Length: 243
Image 1: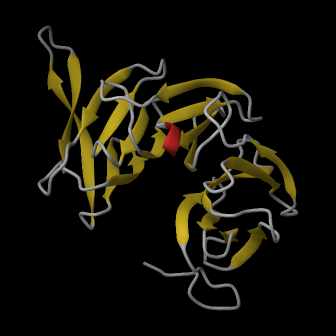
Image 2 (image 1 turned 45 degrees about the vertical axis):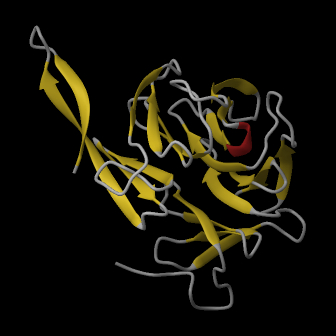
C-alpha cells in the first residue's frame, strides 16, 4: 500500500517496533537512530522522541491511555522511558536493571489492556510484568521454566478486546494465551517448518478473531483464527486453526 521512513532528512535505520495510536499516528522505535519517530498517517514525520542520551536501544513505543504520554521500552537501559507526547520532552524513567518487581532485564515490547494497564515483556527475566499506567507494579506472567505457563525467551505481548493475553516465546516457538486472571488457557505451536510451527516466534498482532505471528527465522508471518465447535450440550467451545 505504501512505504515511508526511507526518504527525507530523517530516515529509519533499524526499526524494531511499530504501533499505531488511536488517532492514526504511527510510532516507530528505531535502535539505529536511538529515537522514536512519530509519523502522520500519510507518512510525514510528526515528532521525534529521544534527545541525545535519552534512549540507548528503543524497541517499542505506545501512547498512554490518556493520550498525553509516549512510553518507550529500552532494552539496553533496562527501563521504560516516558515522554510528553506534545513537546517530546523526557518526563521520567521507570525501572532499572534487576529481577525484582518493577525491575527489568532487556524489556522488548509493550501493550495496554482496556483498563489502561501496561504489559511489559521482560525478556531476559522470562516474564511479562503488568504495571499501572503510572508504572506501579501489579502482577506478572511466566517465569523461567519448562512447565505450562512458564516462559523462556518472551518476545511480544498483546491484549485483545476480550481481555485475552497473547505472549510469543522465541525459545519455545509458540504463542501462549492467558485469560484476564492470568491463567493459561492454551498454547499454539512448536519448533519446525510446517503449518502452525515456528522457527523463532516473535511479534504478534490481533485483529478481530484472527491473530498473526511473525515466524522470524522461518521468514514468514502465519495467520490463525478462532473457530467454534459445538460442545456436548450445544455450547460453543472455542478452538484455534491456522488460516
